[in-house]
Image (cartoon, rainbow, N blue to C red; front, side, top):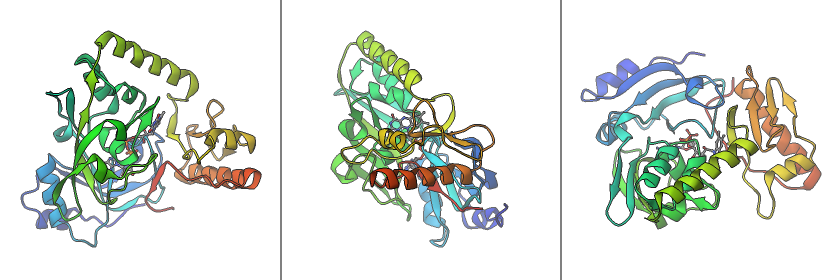
Length: 306
Ligand SMILES: Cc1cc2nc3c(=O)[nH]c(=O)nc-3n(C[C@H](O)[C@H](O)[C@H](O)COP(=O)(O)OP(=O)(O)OC[C@H]3O[C@@H](n4cnc5c(N)ncnc54)[C@H](O)[C@@H]3O)c2cc1C
C-alpha cells in the first residue's frame, strides 16, 4: 500500500517548518504489535511551536492522527491516510518543581516519570512504572494501574488543537472516566504537570519493584501485544468473561488470545492487523453470546483495512 506523496506540497506551504516530514513511512515498527501499513505522512515536530505551526498551515481536509509509543494501538494493514504525528526529543523534558510537582513532556515514557519521581522522593506516581506508553498516551487514555490513575495525579495538561492553538486543560477539563478522556480527539497533548506527595525514595523504589515483579508474572509483557484489549465492563472483569466464553488461547491467523492473560491479544510473529482485529471481534461475539455482555475495545484502532 502506497499513498500519494503529500510531502512536497506540505513543504511548499510550510516554509518555516523545522520538524521531519516523511512520506509513506512504515508504522508497524512504531507499535508494540508490530503490524499495520504506513502513514501517508509522518511528522515529527521539533517542539510545541513547530507542532502548532504545522497544524495551523495544514489544510482542514487532511486528517491528523497522533501516536505515542504504540502500546495501545492497532495500525490497520491499509495504513493511515493524512498526517500521523509522533512527538520526540522536543517533548522530553522532566522537571521537578516546588510543591512536590513534576512537569513532563508528552513524549516521556511513563516509566521514566515513575523513576524521576522516585528519585526526587515524590510518592503517588509509582503506578506509572507498569504502563509501557508515553505521557501523551497516558493523558488520552487516563492510563492507570495498581490503584493509581492519571486523573488522580494530574494538575493540568497542555495541548494543541487542530487549528494550532495551544491551550491548558485543568484536570476537570479532561472529563476523565475509566480509560477515557473527554477532551476532543483532535487535541494533541504536549505536556503534563503532576502532583506528587512527599515520600521516601527507598520505599517508592520497593513499590516499583513489586509492580515490575507482579507485571512480569501475570502479563505477556515481552510479547507483541497491545495490553488490555477490552475495558472492564461495569461489574465484570473482561478477562473472566473471555475465559468463560472459552476464548483463552483462541487463534486467528498468527494472532492469539494470550494463555497467560486472556484480555491480551498477541502477535505470535506473522499476524496481520486484520488477524488481530478479527480475533478481537470474534472474542467480542463469543462473549456476547455466552454472557450477554458487549465488550468495548480499549485498544485504539487507526487507519484503513486492506
Ligand atoms: C504489556 C502492556 C501492559 C499495559 N498495561 C497497562 C496498564 O496497566 N494500564 C493502562 O492504563 N494501560 C496499559 N497498557 C496500555 C498502554 O500502555 C496505555 O494505554 C498507554 O497510556 C498508551 O500510551 P502510548 O504512548 O503507547 O499511546 P499509543 O498506544 O501510541 O496511543 C494510544 C492513544 O493515545 C493517543 N495519544 C498518544 N499520544 C498522544 C498525545 N500526545 N496527545 C493526544 N493523544 C495521544 C493516540 O492517538 C491513541 O488514541 C499496557 C500495554 C501493554 C503493551
